[in-house]
Length: 396
Image (cartoon, rainbow, N blue to C red; front, side, top):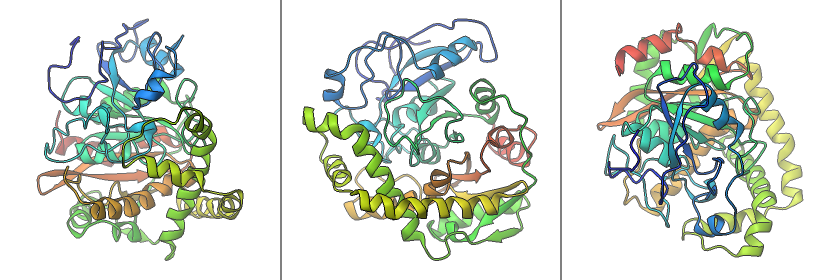
């Protein structure tokens, strides 16, 4: 393990590296990992990507259970990684600590909010990395950086010792450079239940319509290689409602969890971040009452499509990584489409696997499979067609 970041990635939080040895031998012996700075590591302050949060909190007295499990399985912790401020971004840009490097396309952003974890892994500094995923914060960086990524079923992995953001959407996810490592981490972290097999993959036509033409075309070719023939539509023309439902319900939870600290501390947020928290503060109980039934209806619709062992194929993100100098208009358009895609798993609390399936303009493009609740291990099964096909295309 390296004690200092000599790669120039800017992936790790400033200061001495948070490093812990394994506590036992196990499934992950010989592997190293990094942890997003939203997750507690004993003896270190969980900084949340914001200097005022760092200043107003004490070191964790113990590591989050998810970290303890990995150490007990033989993995060694190599450091804590940069996150977008309090996880409220999909860009990977932090006004206080900088933008971690996207080694797959260095002139572009890494995606957030688990940006540092994705960056450290893509640079080969660790073997796998933990992030959190509420609205795509593992899935989008995985797509942008050319990594395998996993968002588990909601509540499959404990969130104890993780800064809460929007708890009914929050999950702890992870990245790897190959499917075998991604699956091995799942063996350690996921509940030990026999997975229901995914017997058929179905392409969600209207999600591909949200992606850019080149992205949609490249991913469609991968679907053909996987033998995907069936298609459905999911949104029924209500894409804007899926997005607004997510914005309202997530925002209300964010303000419930973080609003009291923001009001008391008046932290210095980056210029892009402050308006997002201000917007969350304006969401009313009436807004929440309107959208809670909508969320339930959307989740039920997805679950109906997933019945009988179906896996839904969608683009992980609507585009390749945005350039670092992308305009506000480009960033805004990206969010509208990306959050609509990520809301599919989010509203239903469903597991989603993202695979580095293709390239467009020499930049990675992720393809995702969404499965039914608690079908996590079926997504990570190394005997599946998607695991073998893409492992052959992406040797490690």
